[in-house]
Image (cartoon, rainbow, N blue to C red; front, side):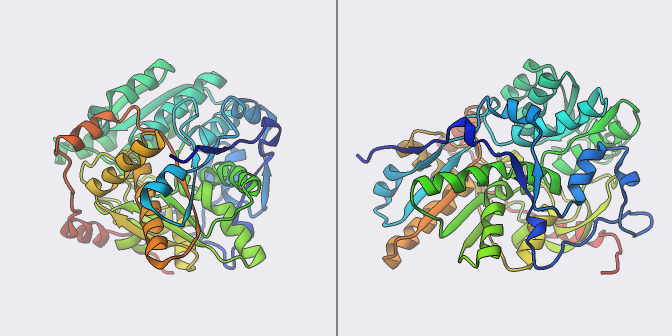
Length: 454
């Protein structure tokens, strides 16, 4: 049996800045548009939802943004996170590949999400905000904002996609433990929720619907702002502490990745690991393959249209250009709740259009098979979302074996599956289904895209 190899940074190496990929791209990403005027949004358009510091980060083209010391103080509870070399997995696969994974499951809520939750709660507190609303799919984001809200003394209300609310009661309990209020979405508490329920009383919900509810609640109260766990530029930037730490840890390993992999729903954990490496490749001319992995039942990057669309189902948000299945599309109720979003982060979509990343999609049962294989040799049970990255890493390692090449494969193990064991129970009982997204439903949703001249 091969030994476990772990690369750990002292807390003195905790990153002092977030990295902004916009500074190094050959072409800027398309602007965010106001749905009424069709013109680029300004700070005043976003002020009802976000504090000014966040708005500034959203539109920044500076390469580095300083991390406030108050945020770094909270980060120190679990950061820097470890980088492992998966020698046991390499041995089991009989591959010449060198497999590394950055493990974000050591955070207080078991995933990468606190990296941005803490930052967002801090900036809202600085602006005098006393209440935050948000949405959550699998519950990792909701529990992370609940944790961050408790740290900074902010009330948190979470609209949780109904199917996940029912599938993952322990995530809901974790949010409530930190003091947040958790509401199944769609709900009767908002106009957006009531509209959906009137048409679809048995709706399982979606992130797009939950976003509408959270945005509506934030827009109607002076003391409340909205907090988003993925998709927008400032969120992706806060996550880059993952990749920045990994770059230093790979220096300790005297290695550098040939392939970088992350699962993608909205794009935050994928961006957090890959963007620092993509930026370095753009600056230094390094050769790098970057693979975004999504569920076959919600394939925005591999099957979606690159177009301007609303980020929510109720059409309360600005228009962003992204790979989308249509804001009205409701994904099937598969277990990777954090990946059940109709669109992809605009910045991730943009780098896909620039040819800087690849995308692939897997079915539910094949990613769980990969997760079980990984757990049995590496001793960590991945979150259902992370299983997509595990599957791609295994496939790349098998490719290296078949081609007889030794490459370094890096992936983000973005969270553990300790609150998702019902999904594994269903897998072992043969109850997991490989949901197919409905092409007819996608076509109908895409037919409703807003008309924007590009």
